[in-house]
Image (cartoon, rainbow, N blue to C red; front, side, top):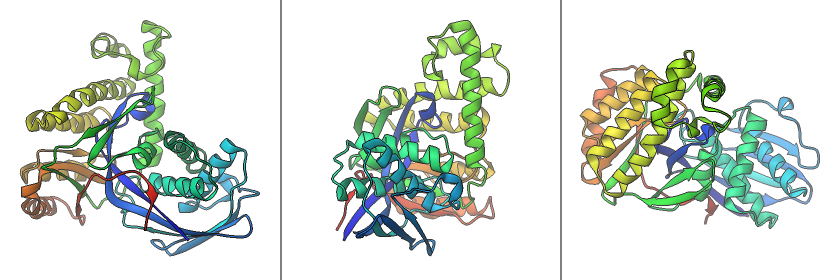
Amino acid sequence: MLCVRAPGRVNLIGEHTDYNDGYVLPVAISLETRVHARLREDMRCIVYSDTLDEQAEFDLAQLPPPDALPAGFIRYVVGVAWALQQHTGRTLRGVDATICSDLPLGAGLSSSAALEAAFAVLWDTLDALQLDRLILAQLCQRAEQMYAGVQCGLMDQAASLLSEAGHALFLDTRTLFTQSVALPPDWAIVVADTGKPRALAESEYNLRRAQCEQAVQGLQTVLGEEVIALRDVSPEQAALYLPLLQEPARRRARHVIGENARVLEFLTALRHADAKRVRNHMLASHASLRDDYEVSCAELDAMVEACLRAGAIGARMTGAGFGGACIALVEKTHVEKFLTEAERLYRARTTYEPRFWACEAVGGASACL
């Protein structure tokens, strides 16, 4: 029997930049998915989700295509198997597996990437594939794109597989350069779930990606073919040339270009534990996601306001948007008071049931006891 744990993630800053070749700064958190598995004698997989009380089966020797599978967790598992087999040219060994998770579904904490990472590490271990963690993250990304139909970037999978305890993970999604960035030891990470499910996230996510591609095409007409992605446009160029674009592509591009700059400025503020600058960058990020990228909602806005009024260093929405969770940075000595006050303030504004988790920054996916 082998057990593998894989953490969820929150993103400190750098939202919707990863599929634009930009910069991101996620943190793997102490909410996780665990997979308990034992090898079978054949190439079948029987996978049971304890969280959902659902079971599914498939054959590794003849993997079903995405459209032959029901929506749900099994698409991610089959997708990982498909990506690993395609990459290695090998047929994996069958398993009986049980999935357990304390990651809330629909909160924007990347439960899907944690599930992918757990099975990637599981098969990498059982089949002695010896794949690099960055390669595993890329294969999990391909699995989600092919089998879940979400044209996601690399951030979620990288965070779940590459993170170091006590650190955020800076990732340049173009060069794939990574760097662990120590978090101030007296700051806590609080995940503040609005209670509103992310009902539109997948369809709107793909639409935003298409709108960013439209913006790139428009900017190429004035800046040339060296503009491969919005990452290649400086804030100074944006001020000059974004007015030439049609809406909403102009505002989508303005968010991404500004967010990339904010990530780099945030890194410096974080390294110096500069609470004021951290707060300003997080608020600017949320405002841009709300106004330019239009992926916030009334509940996310209410939660950010509640967190700030309750004494957070900084707060903003995290994840794809349209519901889900916010992230707040809070002085550890104030966490208990913060949790009580933030919940009271949020409940006064909405009818949804909030949930709060004070989390640690943990390491990436690994075998567990």
